[in-house]
Image (cartoon, rainbow, N blue to C red; front, side):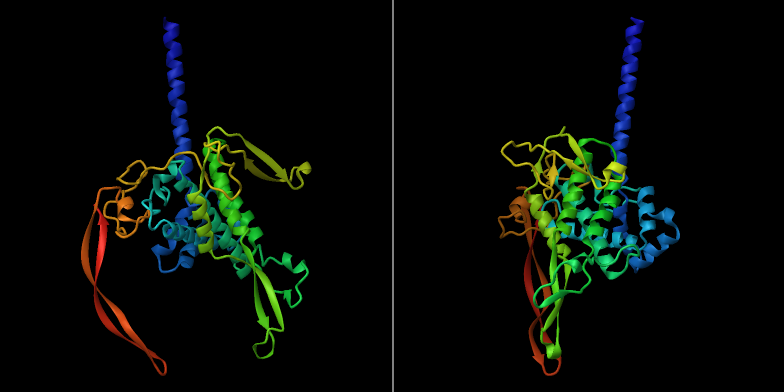
Length: 383
């Protein structure tokens, strides 16, 4: 009898110890994503550059892992691009979800928590979008910084200059270095992911999906040269599409995101000079859709494994306040309409008065004179 009690005690002790370790690893991984807080540094002072410069003077204050600090130290100038990318990703997320129940709220957590809040503890499509948009923003920002000469270890991408030119144009411009940006983002963003569980695979896949939408969006841009504005010859280069376009594409992928089954096995493919141990490892994951009628997700697709909350009411588990008091569109039947936004709770309408410029006329030369008009508008907010 004593032996049985002793064995039960050992099993119970092991179970609670492993559960505690698992929760710690899970919490640590979510809490460890601190580089996103670089987006808020510009708001704490008058200049983002001055804030980052102070961090350079004391690298230990950088909200990065040891591996990330080593990477940015080896590539001077990238920390500014990362901070700009983090801010761009945050702004783009808010823009894309401005008319939805979940409107991409961000927080300033002084205890090292994520700026995107506890939603990251879920495996839902909103979490997937956050990973994709932030990874894409770093890739996009670093690629542009290379072309601008802001990063010491990269320059313009001159690979296209070796490709034959056209009949009335030639390669002679400074192309955005999408290849360097993609590679740097993979090393910087993916490097914080640890473990081999399903969430790890999901995060890496969505990170890569964001980067692919950036690097595959290069387009040719040209400038004319010639006497009196004639276009006798054009010099051309490859330029990344605007990040707003990248955000639009990722939002489309969010709307059509694939729910996948947990327990999928990942494959590791080795590219490059793998025989000598110097190959570049790229991971491809064999995700199975939860709906067998759906196709398997590709590199550009966003994947998730957990249904999203309704986001209607205040939910402490994800730190979301719900849609109470949110503005809505009473004339819309879409997601921004009062019926859907307010989750059937109803809404209140109130009038308010605004003063706007109106009846503007142009006077030679060079003034625009306007009148001030008083108008009454309606505001609708969820109960």
